Length: 123
Ligand SMILES: [Zn+2]
Image (cartoon, rainbow, N blue to C red; front, side, top):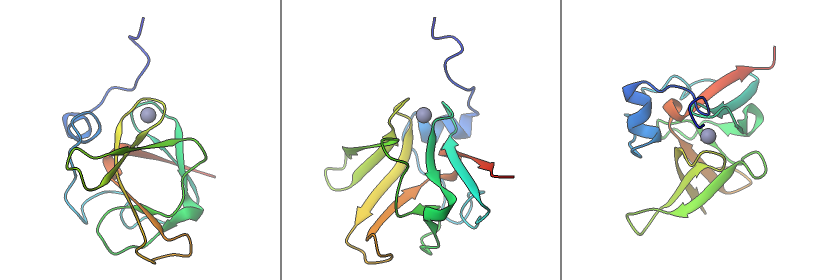
């Protein structure tokens, strides 16, 4: 019944999305990527982030200061310190969210693995 529910993942994607891995900084395809469109979950295609909320954090991963309402779930990380973010639809691992860094007006940084995302252009 769940057979076709999710997209097939490459081993690299599964290592991040299902096993909560982290891609190496400055290597992801969306780290330095500022086209207009929507970032979807690579596993289930749920819309997660809008390009207008993406900013250059310099940290080496795609960064957003806001999510599409209700799309992202925050959970305490297993490390007891950080807040993990997962897709609210499929629980796929996205990355971590940090607050209080004052990088943008919203004072929030969603630090997301490119491998967790799939960009869909507006055009
Ligand atoms: Zn998902």
